[in-house]
Structure formats: C-alpha cells, structure tokens
Length: 295
Length: 176
Ligand SMILES: Cc1cc2nc3c(=O)[nH]c(=O)nc-3n(C[C@H](O)[C@H](O)[C@H](O)COP(=O)(O)OP(=O)(O)OC[C@H]3O[C@@H](n4cnc5c(N)ncnc54)[C@H](O)[C@@H]3O)c2cc1C
Ligand code: FES
Ligand code: FES
Image (cartoon, rainbow over all chains, first blue to last red; front, top):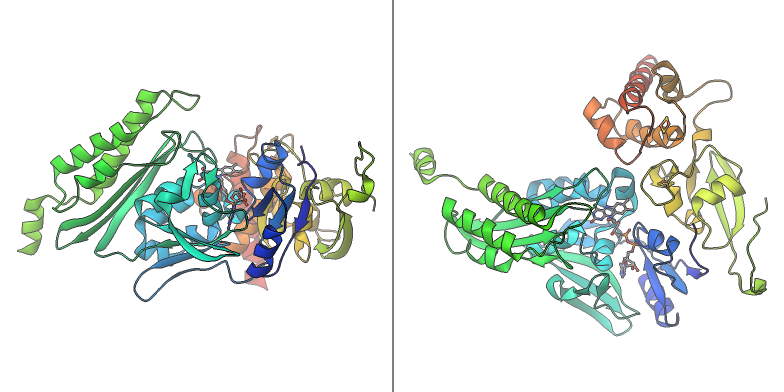
C-alpha cells in the first residue's frame, strides 16, 4: 500500500510552515509523528494534496513546567519522551500513567501528544487525559496565536477547530491549585490496540478536600467523553466511599459504548465503573486511618 | 539506483521527485524519491536491502523496524523523504565483516527464530533497547519488543536470545 500522490514540503521554521499551509491550496495536512496520518494516507482515508512535514522545525520537542507549575508540551514531543519523563512521574500522575499505554513502543518513538490531540480519534488516550486535566491547545496561524480549551478543540471524530493554515504548537496543562492525584486505566486486548475502555481521573486536593476533579472516558462513545457529573459529586469535600461509588456510577452512565469486536456495550460500561472505582479508591484514606496517622 | 514510478495518466512532469541525502549502515547515499515512497520500499527496492521485511503494512507487526537516528521506527509508516539528512540502520548493518553481532549470535544460540520473518525487526528493536539499557530484566525485554509480532516462536526464545546478547555485550564491555 502507498499513499496517493502529494506534494511534500519540510519547512525549517514555524513561520515558513504556516506560510506553506496558507499558500498550499485546499487540502494540506501537517505531518508530525505520522503514526496516524501515514496509515490513513496508505489506506486512502486521507489523500492530501500537500503534506507539510514539521519534523525539521527546531525547538518543538520540549515538555517543561513553568515556575508556577503550568506544563507545556511542544508539537514534536513524542510519546516515548513522555513515557520516560521524570517531570511527569513526579508531578503529573494521570499523564505518567497514560504515556506507556499509548500504542506500542515503536509507534511511541514517532507519535506525538499534540498530533494525537489534533487527530481527534475518539479512541485516543491523550484526549481523555488532557480533557480530565482541563488542558488546552495553542494554535499559531497567519492571523496570530490563540489558546483553545481542549473541551472546545474537537468538533467531531477526526475533526478539530484549527484553520487550514493553523498549526498546533503546544498543549498546555494548567498548574495544579492543590495536590495532584489520579491516574489512567485502559483495557486493551493486546499491546498496540486501541482502548476497549479507558478512564482518566485527575484530582486536586487541598486540606483533605477535593478542590478540582476531572474524569474523562476513552473508547466508549463517538467522542472522548467528559464525565462532568461524576466529577462534580467529588468536589468540595473529602473523598468518601459513598462519593467514590456515586462518581463511578455516574461515569458509567456517562459512557455511550457500542457493542463491537472489542466487547459488548454492557461490558464496556461495567469496565468504566470498575476503572473509576479503582482509580478513586487509590486516593481514598479512611477517616479512622487519617486520625491514627495524625495522632 | 533506479526507482520506476507509475504514470497512468501520462503526467510524468508533475511527479514531485525530490533528491535526498542520507546514511545507511554507515554509507552515504543520495536518492531521488517521490514523496509518497515509503521508507520500507526505499530500503528494500531502492537499496536492495531486503533484510527489512514488510509484513502487515499497517503499522502493527514491526517486521519493517529499522533505526532512524538510533531509534526504532516502523519503516512502512515513515516517508522515505523524511530520512533526508538522517542516519538509517538496518539489520544488514549489525554484523561486522566476518563476525555476527552478539544479537545475531544470541538468536542462533537460543533458537530465537523459526521462519525468521519477524527476526530483523526484533533485532533492531532489541538493538535500541540494549543501547538504552545494557542490563534489562526479562520484563523489560518483553516490554521493549511488545511492538513486534512473531507468529512462530511464542516469544520465549526471542526473549532469551536478547538476554543472551545483553550478557555477551556486557562481558565484552567489561573486557574492553
Ligand atoms: C499500531 C498503532 C497503534 C496505536 N495505538 C494507539 C493507542 O492505543 N492510543 C492512542 O491514543 N493512539 C494510538 N495510536 C495513534 C498514535 O498515538 C499517533 O501517534 C497519534 O494519534 C498521532 O500523532 P502523530 O504525531 O503521529 O500525528 P500524525 O499522524 O502526524 O498526524 C495526525 C493528524 O493530526 C494532524 N496534526 C498532527 N500534528 C499537528 C499539529 N502540530 N498541528 C496541526 N495538525 C496536526 C495531522 O495533519 C493529521 O491529520 C496508534 C497508532 C498506531 C499506528
Ligand atoms: S510491515 Fe510495518 S509494521 Fe508490519
Ligand atoms: S519466527 Fe516466524 S514470525 Fe517470528
């Protein structure tokens, strides 16, 4: 299999890349890791006239925390770098848990987090993680730079709000206002498969109270699902066995799974509940134990 | 080196051929490629290095794995033009003039292959693992090879082969 014929440009700066996209005609595509785009082009699901390869644009492979804790992930920061990142391990439990679960180790050597967000696959793992964390995407185009909350970034399966001459230059995860906890659990039939079901949980706690909660679901609907009602029952008080149960149930209700080769709808919904329970229970310390520790 | 392009509509002057320079197994090369040519095909047809196999052609099996700037990539899922200015290593680049690479020896000693189709990809993924982690656990070997499928061996002996090679490479490094 090989793609249909296209023109190829490999600009060496962002400005040049944006200019190439602007002048590039009707159907141009940005090429980042190519781990979704190249397979789609080989299958002729995508047949762009122009491919703008951004891999030669310097200075986009970073992921770094600002002094205030805001995390920035550049457009060429690849999954394997995030998988090995000490910064994520020490400050971003949900991201650190998800990174090794994306695709397989060789795909992770090329694929990027930002490319994954742009690809807007309802099965994409990073989308749930970034949604749960309340992240956003920074886009740069010929009319300037704008920041788009990720909740508004995806408009449908494989569709995003970017203009044809816009490039997503980085993803941003806001600084935590409390102590971060949470994680990501994914059921996959084998390594390299997309999620049968996945759940991202991102909590921030201060003085024992949950001050922010984000829960998002992968692979159980036509889009990445923000389980906002489930998150809402967790905030404003400490985690309790009751609030955990309730949130897990609401997360399962938020899922819109379909029966397919990966499993039945009922099974997937059950897995969402189970994963939400597991993730939240990890952060729960019974009151008695807390009192004993304090004593 | 010649690559022949399809020209069904007689529009040859529109074929956007590009000239690229790259290094493969230590040798400098220049090629003229159409952007849609995949790296796997440049390697197999253009360079005649048929050790790199194409199995699934859908980014799943890893038989086409080669190193680009030292990292394993699935060459069926990278455009040949993208290696412009970069360094490629294929399975043919492992052995010396007369000696097998310890990984190749390991696969021989531990019976790490049956039909051999997956073997070049396994070896390239393992090469990168041992560069990064000279003393991997069995679990780490399995993890590093989890993007490579084998339909024959059941993986057991592949893992043993890589551990064998790791031990040999460490011993060699110790002697040096
Ligand atoms: C075998 C296999 C298994 C996989 N399994 C998983 C999995 O389990 N979970 C998962 O989440 N993903 C999985 N993936 C997808 C993988 O994570 C991709 O890396 C990711 O979806 C796309 O990132 P990329 O950098 O490769 O983007 P590309 O393939 O380069 O691009 C994807 C799309 O996004 C656009 N794009 C990319 N970057 C930008 C940018 N900076 N600005 C504007 N547009 C941009 C492109 O134009 C294209 O439309 C798998 C892929 C394969 C091949
Ligand atoms: S042929 Fe490239 S991954 Fe199977
Ligand atoms: S030895 Fe036959 S596929 Fe691995």
